Structure formats: structure tokens, C-alpha cells
Image (cartoon, rainbow, N blue to C red; front, side, top):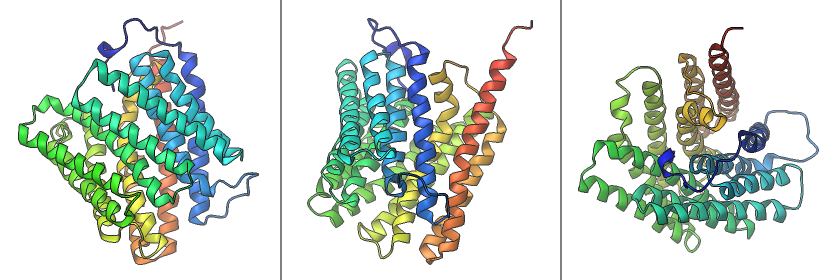
Amino acid sequence: MIPVTDRDPTAVAPAFFWRLPVLACAGLLLLAGLWAALVRLGWPLPALPVPLAGQHGSLMISGFLGGLISLERAVALGWRWAYASPALAGLGALALVFGLPLELGRGLIVLASFGLLLVFTRLLRQHPVEHVAVMALGALLWLVGNLLWLGRWPLQQVIVGWVGFLVLTIAGERLELGRLLRPGRRTQLTFRFTLGVFLAGAALSPIALEWGWRVASASLLLLGLWLMWNDIARLTVRQTGLPRYIAVCLLAGYVWLIVGGGLWVTFGAQPASRLFYDAMLHCLLLGFVFSMIFGHAPIILPALLGRSVVYAPVLYAPLLILHAALIVRVVGDLLGDRTLQMWGGLFNVLAIPLFLGLLIGALIRSALSRRPPT
């Protein structure tokens, strides 16, 4: 998160109710994306007026995650115009949910990613530091991926930009916190080399898809190793309470980033089966990205709601379910066992609303405990 001292001093932060519609939209998109996930897994759910299965990836990545990341930037910086990006992401994804023309929904999401890039461009001019530049590159990859998506390029080429957006956003945030460890020049150069490898693979993928995927995936594996060794989480995991919980989430996520990168290197852009493709993507998007969400949500969600940070040990339960179910799912994918994949995927889905329910419950209890006695 951008510290308060980095806010624009001439800007007035929008009132809380400005954020509420975006958060409500994000919640709706999350539910729609999870419903679509279960349909794709083969679970017999009631039919909806609009088929959502084909929109699962776009709803989760560009609608839910893209909207939340853009909202977090807008709230942290206090720039009113920055709220256009999460609003456009939400509207574009809702257009997809309600079956409006694909060009409308995708076009709005392209505008959302362009808006986020403008936010980081302005921020980079004010604070020309490495972690902001990394997150700006992530926003650029989101824009490029969305433009390819709007142009109906194959999803294997679009997904490199989408994954790069999420990975570089997270890496930039961790790089910012990693300054506390005062990394040496060799450590910094290693990170920059790894980032350069990913960008080279992303640039290569529209021209030579297979080579682009393998180059980009090699960098994901290297980045996971770099984060595992250099992130401050390896120190905070020795503490107690919220710092340890966050560190456990991060370190578990880095393991999945390494595994996912290894699978991408092994199978490339054209895996032998759809099950392999499922394993490759969800190691990154569930194992890595949602571990980061589980770890940061006890800080970010209260900040978005204007509440105090909350933590309860019960948050370990959905984290354990998420990772245990993902192991079952990936094993099922690699063995070609659809039953294991379906049950692992089901519990992956259930872990997410369980986590949000527990976190919101903790927020409510915290707010009630702070009320003055009547």
C-alpha cells in the first residue's frame, strides 16, 4: 500500500460511500466468478440466464482483482479521478455478467487498465523509485493483455499479460517492504534480471507463443525463489499473531509460484491436456495470488472500510482448506483424475467465501467492541 505521506496534498479523499458501490460490485463479481468456476469444473448447478463459464478468467482477473487493486490505489492515494479505473473495471465485468455485447464489457475493462496505468505514471513522476516502476509495468501488462483480449487473440497469449499484471503488482509491493532489509546490490540486480526475463517472455509471446511462455515461466520460478529468500516474511514468520499469519500466507504463496513456474516451463503454452492447463494456471492464480489476498486482506479491507486492522486465529482455517484442496486438485490434474480435480476445485471455491465471512465477522465484532456503553 502507498503510505499516507505519499497522497496528493491538494486532493480531498472521497467519502466512504464512494467506495461502497465498488466494493459491492467486487463482491458480486467474485460470486459470479466462483459460480463460473464450479460450472467449469463440472458441478451441476442451476442454469443462469447468461452463461458464465466462459467468463470465469476475465471476471476473476480483470473484474474482481483488477477492480480491487485499482480501488486500493485510489483509496491509498486519495486522488478522486483515480476512482474511474475501479468503476470502469466493475462496469465492464458487469456487462459481461449480464450478457451485453462483448466489445462493450472488454472495452470498458481496457479503459480501466489504461486508467490504472495513468495513476502509476503520475505516481512514478512524483516518486521515481523501483517498486513503483515495477507496479507500473504490471499495469502496462494488464493493458496489453486486455487489448489482446479485446482483439480476440488466443487466451494463451492474453493470459501472459494478465498473470504479469498480478505478479508484478505483488512483487512491487513486496519490494517496497523489502527495503527494510537493506538488500545488497547483487540482490537488487538479481531481481531486475528476473523481471527483465519475464518482460522478454511477455514481449516474445505474441510472436512466438511457445518460447514466450517458457521464457516468462522461467522468470516466475526464479522470482518465487528470490521472494522466498529475500522477503521480510522469512523473519516475521517467527513472530506471533497477525505478522506470523501474513508471513505464512506469503511463504506458502511463494511455494506455489515456484511450482506454477516449474509447470509452465515443463508443459509450455500447449499442454497435453486441459487438466494440465488447469494445474498450471491455478498454481499461480489460486496458490500464489489468493495466498497474497488472504495475507493482505486483514490490513487492506479494514483500510478500504475505514476500520481498524483485525486478526483472528480462525483465519488459518480457510488458508489451510485453500492449500490442501489445491494440492488435491493439482494431483488430480496431473494424474488425469477428474474426480480429484472436481473435489479439490470445490473446496478451493468454498475456502474463499469462508475466508471473507470470517474476516467480515471479525470486523463486525471489532466495531461492536469499540462502541461506547449506552
